[in-house]
Image 1 (cartoon, rainbow, N blue to C red):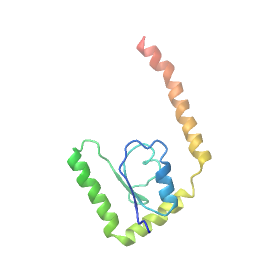
Image 2: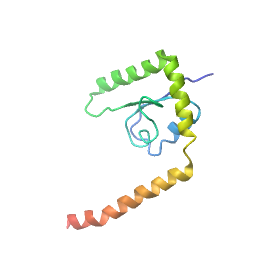
Image 3: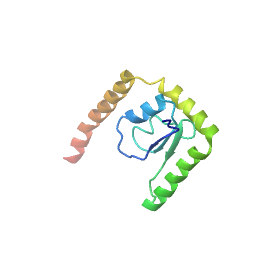
Image 4: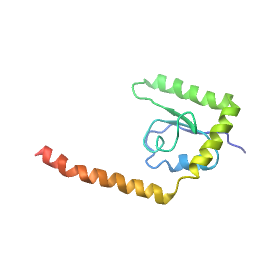
Length: 120
């Protein structure tokens, strides 16, 4: 069995691990503009990112269907995106992911005292 692309219509992927695995397998990603996914996928280069903000559920479905259709119907674009996704994934590591996670916690931690002071 062969897979040509990775469809990932989730808003809740924190690290994007499944997205990175798909990219490492040479698959372009059809995803949503959300945390984790937007950090990995370059819209139009390694896949497509759909911004669903302000869209009704029906509009989200139609727009995502269009995104998938573009990948299905344009084999040459899909292949080039898959190759780009593979190359991008090779630049990533767990060490790097954990470094950015710690940086994020650091940023939140520095903001907590200001939030506490403002709430008093």
